[in-house]
Length: 287
Image (cartoon, helix red, strand yellow):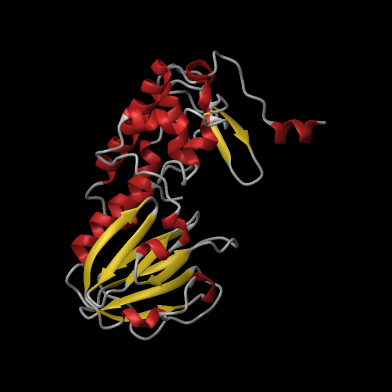
């Protein structure tokens, strides 16, 4: 799933490749991708892109007609830039292509989505805040005004576990499954620790890990072409997606906890005092 660093890199990439260029065609291939119908998606045709912004994990492309083409790539969506789009309109079918945007230069991009769970979302709105997911976003963790006091205030009465709290977009915008694992590993904290139980010293450690992990990931991704961002993300992860591999800090074996539709990875030595966390799904299978 693209998270804050990858979407930030896509924002930079699209700023360079889209701003000042005119959209001549928006071609939805999968009807499920469109989440708004008034104005229609074709209303952005003829407009020049004036700015590209990021809101959490959302991409916002503003046009000089006052409309915004907003994209959320969800779990399995991606953006593929084309220096030259294929001739002729795309054919609807069973492939991953969901929507194509063509520019007057012959360039453009495709939005694709793998798998059967179709969550990729495209909106055409007059104001990004009309998108429900943007309207309920919490603060951006890399914003200049997101200081440690503000972070501590968010967690003070938060009764959930740290893993769930960090992933809640209405609490903090942009952090997903992968980077929450990375942040907790850098902070040396259990994903199951209650957010409200943190001491001031632990809050400082987690805040530092949050900012440093995301900042470093953004810097790694900066300037990377859109097509290489996925592999760049994976290469920079220390624990997420690395079950069974040695921890790069202490050498212990990275372990996993599985849920119905996701999993988390952690290092027992670095994060849980050497104790493996209970994997409830696996425990049920072994009964």
